[in-house]
Image (tube, rainbow, N blue to C red):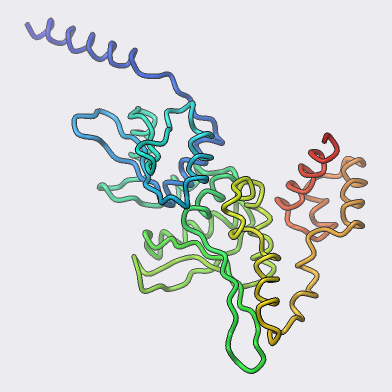
Length: 292
């Protein structure tokens, strides 16, 4: 009887596995999913479900972004439900991710699982989920602007934020700083340094700029210009900072010449004084324009 029962259970298991969709997320798609898990998204189990699934809720103003995300992940079981939910199917792939990111049922950053969003699109999704670009001004006599880029990683502890911060620097050359916050677990990542803001936005722009409603998160110059136009007392010396000039004609010509000379992308970035990912985006943009 035990042997028959074992064979029956084995047959049921084989039948169950055979009935699962054969989905194989690419590294690009895994980066989107993991970047989203670090942001608004979560993994969970439905009642009587053997496997985990991904889910996130969103407001009407975030619909365009979620439609984009669902489109990038449609062949791995993602779709929008009820107008304001992005969900995946239940699948062993998402159970594996659950085991990596949930310790005792709590979403956790570790030195191992943080290595999974290793494409820029993962950082871009974390930023679109939980990030902000703030361009504020003080009210002193000599009014100045105080821009910052922040990731509101309040769901994670100080140690977890440090792990994330170090990983972003080592992998994408993004230099953010730990900052205390009264909400959540008390910590977030941010920078108010102009060069680091420009560097960060250059890196994530290729993906964030695909979503029209997200322009406020990457178009730094436009946000600055609105501040200057709204208040003539704001000191404008910052607008003359060379870091605000994306690419001059001379820099673009230099990039083209160096690329034709088979100079590495990293070396080109060093020569023109721009971020590696920013130069990668500019070259992609130049190729696209040459074909149009």
